[in-house]
Image (cartoon, rainbow, N blue to C red; front, side, top):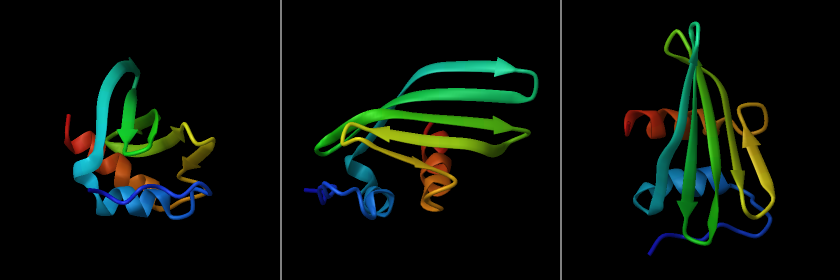
Length: 93
């Protein structure tokens, strides 16, 4: 059984990365606009559900935002591990 995310959200992305087997991302939408491709995933991890939006340009991740049901937003700006999670999710496509 994977470790649950804390209510405060501290180290949430790191916890998910250490327990990838318990993290599920289902592609809901994919849109292309020029060089940019935007993906929207429905995600689930143990006690949380949410959405994960990832945008790429020229195969580089330029936007990644994880919105979990516990009321926390994680992005490239406030958590460097979001990029690692985005890379993992995109590899699963």
